[in-house]
Structure formats: structure tokens, C-alpha cells
Length: 557
Image (tube, one colour):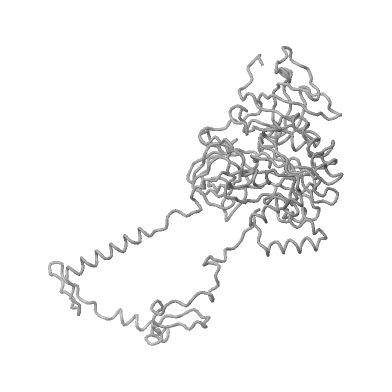
């Protein structure tokens, strides 16, 4: 969803009248007036030799009656044609050498590989903005696009006018990310917005997740592509409390990104410029103190993996440039962008088998384009790949990112694959692209499940419990087919006897069955395809990891 800007320096965008006139020597012999709109005609006038179709026919008849010139016999040498030029063999040799020299120059002057396909050494990171509705996620995302030069002044003025016409002046930056009419009318993000920006150190893809509880499945699909999560907290009086208490999305979003495997979590305390806050250190500390115990219980190492940064998404304060001492004298930590640029590189499995969970697909000029993030392995133009389940053979004809065309892509890249061998309508999210080392596609597998909060009407998790499985980008109906053993969360010891049920805040080893085959890996083999979430009744009830993709042993566990 990044903005597209025309380059005024590119020759293709310079109007013809602005180009200097070509030199006279380069013009054709019959000069054509610049004002002439009609395309230039040939210099020779056909009317001088042919006035009508009748003359044309008479000419053809006369040509047929004319005697055919005699052809010399093969044993007689042909007579040389007289010429006013005398050609010497040395001249021919000189000409050959000159031509060869010109060809050599042309070969040397051939343009090298286009910069678009050159490998960029900067690391690529996928960052997702999460948090309760109205915390300011889209505003922050739009402000980043403006600060990094991805939105020009004219486009910003357009968004400003649209926001003003809708009586939503404060939503101007959110309009950069929320592009459809439903999102702008309601002021709520529905789909995961995507945009791209760069710094001198890294390349980034923004994933702007919806904050409303009705759109949590969309948020999960976006989080499955993320490397870093930014949890946006509103410091405004009343809004932080609403998002953090039961029913708010702050807690659920933080749990979800941890389960999905996002290691680094940045927490930005937004709206610090609000009149009810006024960059108050007391309010900032209050938010941090309430969030810290919860984050520890979720499994985060607060000192190592989490940082808290006060910002204003609307003014851009402390996002790229530090706040002034007059504005915020008590904070001397990193800005939001300097913290992102300073994160250690994410470990990637470039030598592992290719795995690309499909996010979406569409048609482009009659060709099928598949979107996804490379979780493991590499992919190249011309490579033969498979779409699982189904083992549909495809050929890669082009690889694109938001800004570049590539010949080869590495893990961590969000890419668009143009493929040959399948129709767009048959590709859906949840499928996985792989190489000859096929990904397992199963309808039953063993998991370690952490049960958080079961609904009141289904307060016991038993064999036969039905839920919705969210695994990478796949969403499938599932059922708990067997409870194998209950696990003590403190000692990790398993019970010797199979449990008949478990309650909320329990850990259990069990088996899950799905209605359709699902591409899945064990957590130890590839964590991105081995983590999952169970939801029921519009809420997240459990999270877990796949412990085994082996078939169940007959008569055993």
C-alpha cells in the first residue's frame, strides 16, 4: 500500500515539448514541420507513376507481356556489373575491422543487470502494529510513510481535504493506510494494511493490523508474517484502561504475537501530546507498571525483548527525531526508528527446504500472482515449485517485492510470485509453496496446548471439543481428537494417566484433527509452521505448538 511517486527526472515523464530539438543531421531529408499533427508521409509521391487502380492493372498486364530477360547458363561466368566505384581488398578488410570494432563497443556498452535485480545487503524486517482499537496504529503507520518520504505533499493535501470533508481532520495520517471507503467511514481498520519504507540501515514492510475484536482473524494472518511487533498503547485517560482491561484487545494481541513467534516487542505509549497527558512522566510510568507483570506472565523477557517509548503519532514526536527538552525533559532513550534500526539481525533458514505460506493471490495482465513471506529456503526465477496440499506443479516467471524485481529471494522477504501452471481462483491463503522437499500435509497431528480461558458455556476442554485452528496463514475447523497427558507447567512433567478433561489455565498434550489437510511442520523443525492458535466464540482460548507430525501408532499414544 506504499505510495507511488513519479520521478520528474525520468525521460519518460518529460513532455515532448520540453525536450530540446534534435540536431539537423539527425532529421530525415524531407523536413517535417513541428506543428504538423498528421504523421509524416513518404517523400516519393506515388501519384506520379500511378493515378488509379486501372493504371495499376494495365501496368501489371504490360509487365506480364514483356519478354523475360535471358538467364546466363551455369557454365558461363556472369558478366560483371559496371560501377563507378573501385573497391580494393584492403578497403574491405578495413571495413570489416571497423565493423568488428563497432560491434565490440556495443557489446562493452551493454547495460549491466538492472539495479532492480541487484541484491540489497540491507536486512528486511516485517513490522506489525497491534493494539486496541483507536490506539493510533494507522496514524503512526501513515506518519512513518510521511517522515520517510513515501508520501508527497500533493498526496498529503488530497488526504487532508478528504479528512476535512468527512469531519475527521485528525485522521489525515490514517487515510494513508486505510484506503477503502468502509475503513474511512467507520474510522476502523478492517484488513491488514501494507506499506514499504527504507532507512539507511534496513528495509521495512509495515503491517497495520485491525484493532477491533471482530477482525482478530485478520490480525492473526498479518502477525504470521511479522518479525517485530509494535504494541500501541493510548496514554489518553480512559483509553488505556479500556484497552487493557478484560474485553480490550491489548492483552489478546500481545499473547497472539508471542504465540505466533514474534520475539521482539516494542511498546509505544502513544498520544503523549494529548491535553489529558501533556507528556507526563507519571502517566507513562503508570502504563509501564501495569503492563510489565502481564507481559512477564505471557512469556516475554521484559528486560531483554521489550522496550517502552513515549511518542506522538499525530505530531511525529520521538518517532524519528527526539523530543525537545522543553517538551519531554525526562526521556533520553531511543526514538522509535533508531530502536528498530538497532535490533539484532533475525536468524533465517536460507539452507532449509523452501516454505512460503500463501497470503493472497490475484490476476495481473492475465498472469497469476501469489503473495507470501518466505519463511525458509530461497526461490529463483525459472524454478519449478509445488503448491501444497495437492502437489500442483508451478514455474516461477517473476519475483517482485514492493519496490524491486528480483532474480532470487531469500527468507524474510514479502514477495509476489508470478507463476505459470495454475489459475488464480484456485490459490487461497493457507496453502504453502515448497520445493521438491514437500511440506507434510496432515489431517491429524500431536500438539502441546496451553489453555488460557475457555468460554463459560464450554468450561471444560474434552475429547471432541471443536474450535477454529489458526496455523501460519491457514484457518481450518478442528476438533480435539484425544487428550494424551496433562502437563505440570512448572516442572513440565506429564501425568501417567490420560485426563478426561482440562480447565482454563492448564497445559495438555493432545491430538488435533482438521476437516481438510493442512500444511504443517513440527515446531522444532520450523517454528513458523509449527505454532498455532485455537479460537472459539470470537475469542482466543488456547495456543500451542506442534510436537509431532508422525501418524498415530496403532494401540499406543
